[in-house]
Image (cartoon, rainbow, N blue to C red; front, side, top):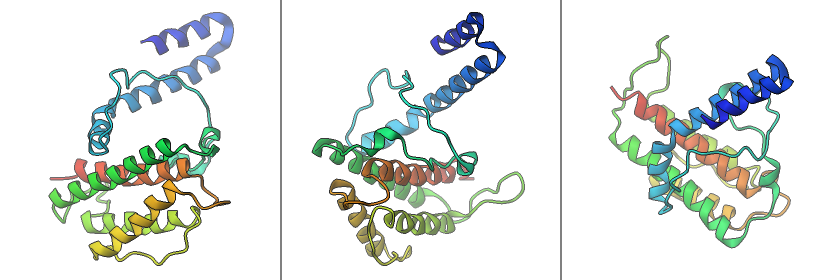
Length: 205
């Protein structure tokens, strides 16, 4: 509501229709994010982190110019704030959230049938192919983090855990001069795991 009032105020102050349109887009994005708070809360609980009571109230602290990947929901551009070196506590926190994202995905996968409902056009990966895609992406994400490791076998739990263990260790102790900062890598990895966990949930018959 506050954001809607600010958008209207911008229009009254002469920002014009373009300014109003941009403000309303921001409101829409914030509302969409707020709607996911119950889902994020489950992940935070796995990480033993309690969301604040005002978790759905946002202050926009940075705007990022996107690229073509943004159209598909991919957070493909790091924020300037993510370039800073993390404190020990911050590194532990983000690594815990990434680990919790994986745990949540694994829980959903364990309870999902092999065949998921199809999209409006009959498309969409089934459970096992989706999990293979996520694990392959995690190996791909490890490279801009500075890691040079063998891909994990998605059908081998020990192999997958070993890959994830190395990623978590690198989030806590980043490799110097890596292309991705620890903060951005954590956001990108957690986003991808949860994006497919929630897709899997939503497509359970």
